[in-house]
Image (tube, rainbow over all chains, first blue to last red; front, side, top):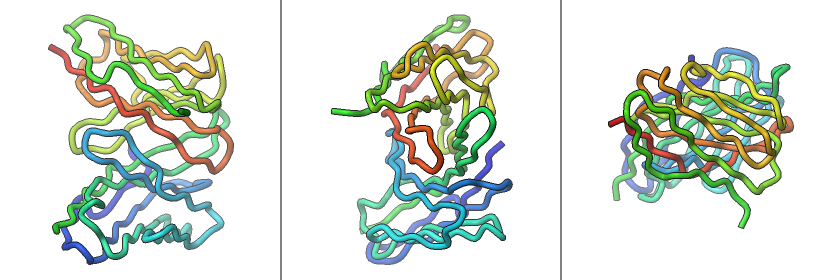
Length: 113
Length: 113
């Protein structure tokens, strides 16, 4: 079963607009990460937020984490056509057997020029 | 260059055959992961390994097997017991400690013919 679930599943915006997507998860986590995937390619890490952090920035990206609601959001400001991709959240949990990284279903973002 | 390499990029399998997907990393990472991605879907964890000679089942391990005899290598065998193996397979690695990002290979697209 998926630990993280993204919302919306798909998003279409104009270049220059902001894109916001959300991630909800079910169990306690050590960290939450966001990744980007261009069609047919591997994933690229964007940002990691620890469970004791509430907000983090990286360039045009802003991530928030609310552990009481078990949710996170990713905001991409001033979007560009090159931001067209799928975005995934992943939750990191330390288990007795190791560091398990579980992904959600993703949000497909289309930025129209 | 440091990185994670998957081969082959495309693989065709006849029904009833076992096939092995290669994953090699030269990042000196302890943890390695295998994920399956179906069209338009998120990533589902097949197996993960925290250390050499040890690995754990993920959420969809049935019909798959792995080995971790060397730190840099984590091959995945798709056995004939996997009834619907056509998918995009992604390998990843991470340092393995708490709160670290994962690095992904470019994937292997497996098709049953």
